[in-house]
Amino acid sequence: MSSGQANSERSARHPALDNIELVAFDLDGTLIDSVPDLAVAVDAALGDHGQRPVGVDKVRDWVGNGSRKLVERALAHALATAPERLEPQAVETVHARFLDHYAEKPYAQTTLYDGVRQCLSALATRSVTCVLITNKPIAFVGPILSHFELADFFALTLGGDSLDEKKPHPAPLLHAAQHTSTAPAKALMVGDSRHDIAAGKAAGFRTLAVTYGYNHGEPIAACRPDHIVTTLAELG
Image (tube, rainbow, N blue to C red; front, side, top):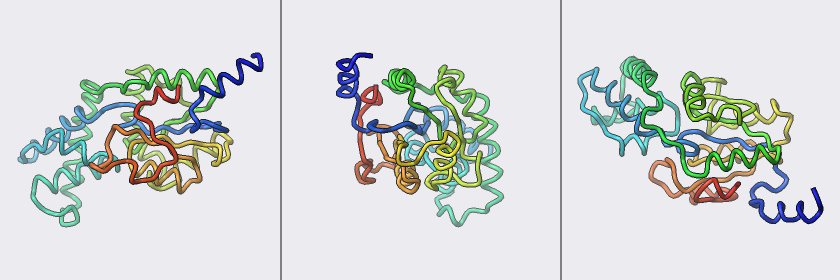
């Protein structure tokens, strides 16, 4: 590459990528819009236990802390009670049915956000290592990545049950940094929610948030990420 080409690439690169060797991506709400399929599974699980459906709009606000927390919020809403007042066994029972229903159709209505493939392809071309860190149970991650032909972009994939801790705890991010022999200061966490940004900051990563996705109805700017984009194509 000539010096002119190198300077041109540097000028075109988003500043979030300056001196970055590792990019960790969230999945739901960042790479894919999975809420339609999650809502179908939540409503089916509630229906199995005689409860009315909660619908896609409610589910969109509840995503982000893993599947059990999603079911807990949905069941509490259906029963018009506080989550902490639920019987743990009732949550476990409905959660088990949710997992069964979601496993049947984890990507029937799920879509890839605009700019995702462009972004991942560009990072691969630049030899930037990418990992996936999601709070979704790991059993569902592989089939979804395969469906969208994204698996080969990631050097490591962690689900919400891959380690003892999940986001917003920094452990998954620090595990990814260690696994790829990357200093946290040279890593970037990309996500759509306060949990992603909190995990990134706690791990010593730089942070980048997308303006779409699921952040419990709150503006992502309130989390004070280092960078904000409206589409991941901006990183490409």
